[in-house]
Amino acid sequence: QVQLVESGGGLVQAGGSLRLSCASSGRTFSSYAMGWFRQGPGKEREFVAAISWSGGSIRYAASVKGRFTISRDNAKNTVYLQMNSLKSEDTAVYYCARSKYSSLSPWRSDYDYWGQGTQVTVSS
Image 1: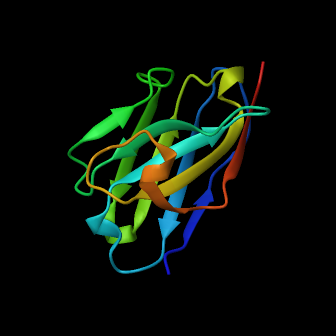
Image 2: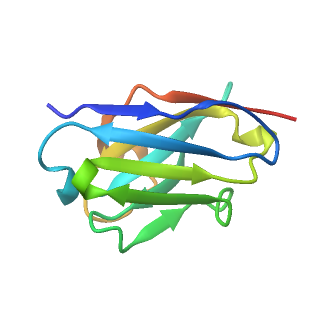
Image 3: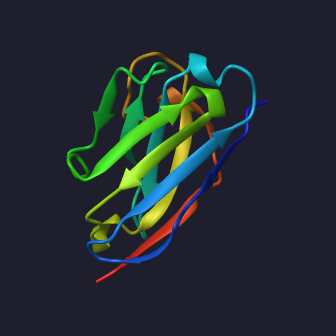
């Protein structure tokens, strides 16, 4: 069983930065692509970013491109999301997830394990 645990969320002012972490249990972390999703108040869960198993391929949602950076450290079984220039519309619960496939899918159904989420609140 794979467990994913997010951390690093909190309250930040607009224009500020946060770095989220997602630690994975299990010995096969480095074999899988990983993704970040978010769910804002009253909204559906949406894709934010994904990274290949090696870190060599990355995909971002248009809404965060240029402001967010996804990365991973396979030696630490951890994936990160650096969030800069935060806006009030970035307020959401952020989830990390493990992809079933090697492609960097934006679809929730292509991810099989999910963390419990971490709250990010951006005040304007």
